[in-house]
Image (cartoon, rainbow, N blue to C red; front, side, top):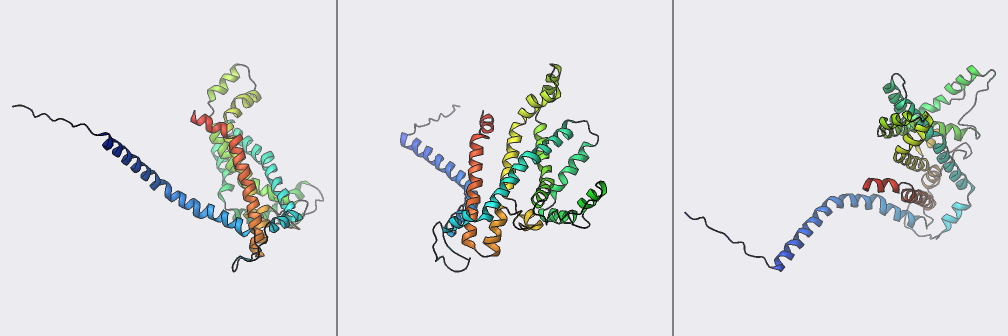
Length: 318
């Protein structure tokens, strides 16, 4: 019995091109189906509000009725001439600098101590340091309002027990101490997050390399400087990025603790924006502040990723 033979007829070039075009269209539609929902959310909740804020910032508007009184750059001129705005910008920069100079090194030191040290009960320390980050910002602020209480607060009681004739201080009510007191709360709240990130980065550093460096005669400081920290570079750069953006966007803690007072001594960009744009219904002026804040953080974000974090992206691709 003979087996029937089948012959595949050659396809024309037009049919091949049509099939290729259909596959490309189907591939494009599949990609669009996955990308479109995210793009819609991005456009609705980011692009459109930013464009509207730019529009509102050009008007004297209280949030009600149509946009009628056009000011052009009047809100911006008023804002940059306002000493309170200048003060709030300086305070935001101070929080950024203090976070980079104190908060991150503290978190890194504790991560090295807990992750590489020989402390007993390291899991307990890890959990204890991370717990403040779990609390909401409102709860954290309320706790520290009791800690800073001028008559029965823990801080005053502690200093009075170790310093003779210590006078109780109103830590949040004194212009000289309020910003430092607020920054201490911010550090207590967020340094646990950075510590956990550093510990995660530390797990990516092979102990064999550190041991090899010690065998070659390197001191502990040399091991830290030339082996551990360079291999944690991507994590350190990311925490700097998060810390700067987070410092510029601080609001809930400061507003709950001091509302920007006393006498604007803890006024930050976001509290200044909220105070004028929301509570006083200067929506046009508040939108101008929001635009400046957005452009400031956007410029830092793009510049930092382009210049500093670019090496991390290149190494990942390689």
